[in-house]
Image (cartoon, rainbow, N blue to C red):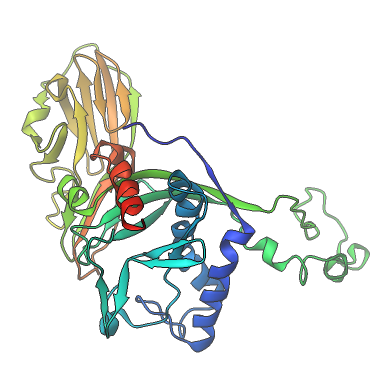
Length: 361
């Protein structure tokens, strides 16, 4: 499956219901799911809860139009404690015109309806290198993974009628004649006037649709207190005239599924709590290890090679740089995978769409 190149625009109208929902919970001081309204100001709460926006956007603008034009997703706007009520799927159902077709029902706890598709939506920032999943009974659910690329000022359009005005701007103007005697390097500047003509807040891109069980099978499980080491970059470097003694890459990795490989051990910093997550390799037998440091491995390729989504040339030397995500304080297990190779997991997009189509008939 090729990576989807379609960028789906996120508009102000897409976000308004979530703004109201988050404000409602913040006002009550109840931020379920591990967030506490008592310790978070509303700006921080928005930033943490913004990952729920793709649920409606990806279904209303991408999936459901493939079935019919009169469909809309039903998102979960109930307020509840998951420890008491259970965890509802991200998609509660679909509206067919004005009629709701639920995928779940609440009988003192959330329960899936017979043959109804169970769907979780996970969103990740474009800048993130990894995707992750904590298994909360997701094994047989569809996993919709979305990459978001929100503008840094995505909340700005919601303030246009109250804050972004000429009157407010004029109140912020400083009297340079009073305060500035010399400013040769222009280190001091007046407040920048806000100008935002575009009402779009950013975009999102579908990474893949797979079964949560498949994702967990292809990814690496970090247990509580364990931190993942992931590849941050691969850069070509100078090849020595005379190669030092090399070590076959097979001494470092074991083949897992297809072209996925797991690491035999952490030979970087030798910390048993730091785990190297699985990687995708084509022509692994054409890789020789020259040396390593606490955060990198230097390799030599005897033929063309592919590591994750990076193509490497033959007879060249590369430095694989690793980055650690510290989760030493975490008590729960979490599955990790490099975002660049998610598309290697068998896609279930068409099956999920057909499942929805058949269920809402």
